[in-house]
Length: 293
Image 1: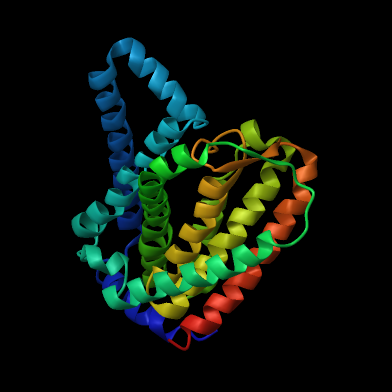
Image 2 (image 1 turned 135 degrees about the vertical axis):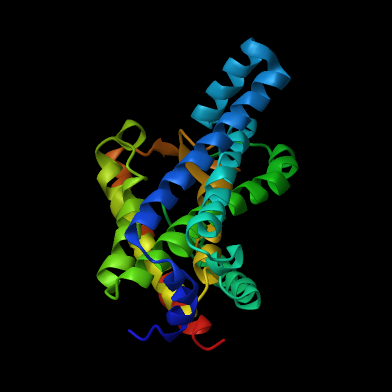
């Protein structure tokens, strides 16, 4: 694969590419992330008092109601800020280097999001027998939608900044093989989606789906020299999964509809593989279009 644009994207990371810097950077990111979560917990405590804080933190952990889900999405602020602190403190890089050229990032974000919208809308027209019920009334859903979109934008952006903007570029500055700088961040991204408590025996299939997405997002970043296309792809995917139709259980609180089946149900497996197929098709189309624009 030709990744000439990736060389420009990785260039700022070559100034301080040492592995020990990456490890310390990851510790810094984890610390900033934890601090962000602690500040949110503290804010809830100040506003709601001990009793109210216990209730809201429980709501946030379950993420089956709209406010609790928004609070959970807000915890990604620390994940977004952490890599920005790390590149300045340990790698002598600008914050902007985590994104790539601004105009390209914005353009490719919009293109990827538009392509996803068309493909996902078409996929909803396909016949299926999945039982779907209303989760939030239209009025309530619309009232939460602006903040919900900001929350998903933040959550997906934080993950792209960390895994593609920081880890991928820093590993690529140290190692030439894509087997390292593409695969390692994608494996970590996938493993962090392992949740047998919610997905049961399906957890490994969720990990495979997340790992596939991670590899495709890494490819888009390497192909375009920015995180724009990967972020737009990720954002559109999560808007559908979190805000439009969600599975019962965690992260269903902001969805307009919920599928009446849990992530742990074996009947969901064909849908996971169908989703992986849709992800592959969407990646191919995005890759073809952004390569020409």
